[in-house]
Amino acid sequence: MVLHQTVTPVSVVIPFVAIGYLYLDFSVRTIFELLFIGFCLSLYMFIRHHKKIRDFFVHFFGSLYITVSLSFLVYMAHEGMHLYFMWLLAIIWFSDTGAYFAGRLIGGPKLAPSISPNKTWAGFFGGIFAGILGGYLTAPYLQSLYITPLQIITVCAYLSFMGHMGDLLESLLKRHYNVKDTGTLLPGHGGALDRFDSLLMVSFAAGLLIYLGL
Image (cartoon, rainbow, N blue to C red; front, side, top):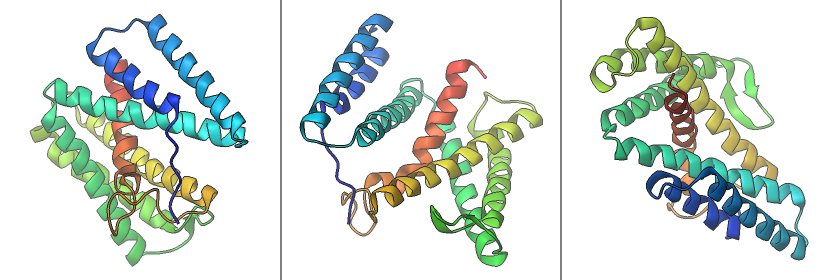
């Protein structure tokens, strides 16, 4: 089974607003007006088709989360932050690898058995440690935003942690709707969200730091 995906006004408006913010200098008022219109039209569609309001909010905030995350990736490309993007990927890869081997070799108590039965606390902390290590080693070559060792370690730990949260969020969504994959876009791998769950959350987390000037 795969997650049923519905195209609604809000799932179209949110990406349009993101493009408008990045390239068309949309005002804050225009952004909120468009979001409000998309929100109301989509809510009407859900009510008209007798769908649960809870599912509407999952749809709305899911669309918002994915769009904002992708917008930060577009922003990085637009600003020439290609090496910084590679640094984010390095943290994710090291974190995922460390989590896998720590979980397999150490095992132990489950992290969230009702959400993702195979994840353990050992894998969680092993992944964060590996993410810090990989990010720290590659930081001098791939980014220039964080200079001191404390800054680099703190940001790496934060991004590695958020990568794990992205994975768990994806698992929680699939458990809630009792589906195996989020789509069929990638044969043998499920939907795009199944492959890029950690990247979306790390992109969101990194973009938030950039936006806040941290």
